[in-house]
Image (cartoon, rainbow, N blue to C red):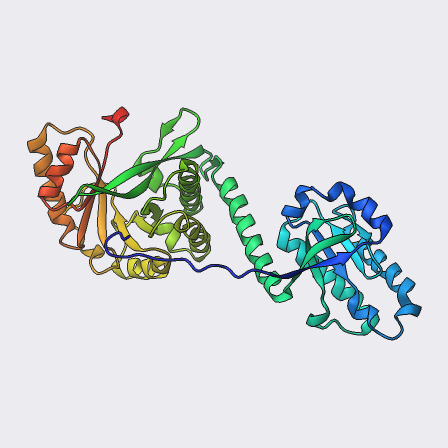
Length: 406
């Protein structure tokens, strides 16, 4: 499937676990582990086995066994502290239990602890000797466990950490905040269906946002938004995507083709905020069928070269780039020509005298837009009939004004 002729796919991530085997338990350990046999810790990957086979195969193992056990216990006690526990379950295996740790982070920590033990007794820790197993089942006499791949664990742990931080950041950045001028604001978002007008086929949603002043629950005007600081605008952009992604997830239905996401030129022109936006755009992309469309806003007075630079840097994260205008396009749009923008988008006037007046407005707006881009998208037209009229004068996409605001 495609939107404006483009479709994308995502590669799968490699796993970090190898084949499973069974490790025997000593009788005391078998009794102690009985309560964990059906524990959710197994599914969460929070039970892992550290194996000292590399030391046990050396000639001096019978003499050093007690010293190795003692050092391993002291090492695990020091590192785990109050964050977990451990139990020696056989002559060469220690079970490490980390209830509060993520799966691959737990495996990475076990690999690090085992490496420390091996280095102490053998002088170095070869990757082939780092025998850590993720426990998947506990039986009466043994543990079923899969040997993990140290290299894959490192990659998986980094990805796991990025995803956790992104989720936490999205939650935090979606919360209300105090702007630089002392105004307490919050971002309100809804998903608004967007239609391709030639067939009146739905292509997905756009994130329609309002920035609400919390003291009186009034939405900030375009002028008030433009007067916010760079940092405030960046927070609003990030909160918009985070809330839009949450809305998309909560729908629990078949995936839409695409999602149109508004971001400001101010945020795109800053390296730090651009990196944060890229992560959230990737998260949104994973929730739709073909990809996301990035709608760059606040571009009316931006020099052409600056706009080209900013859109080029964000282009790899998006399927298409559109320009979002605060008002209907007029003749002064030369700076938007040849700037990577595929379309211009703008809202229809809330109050219009009738179909004839709307048709005149739409014809003028679409004609102006198509002097610099291929497509024109009109948001919040009053009726399906007006959407048809917009199509007659060359508009390519539209959304309908929510019934409550018509």
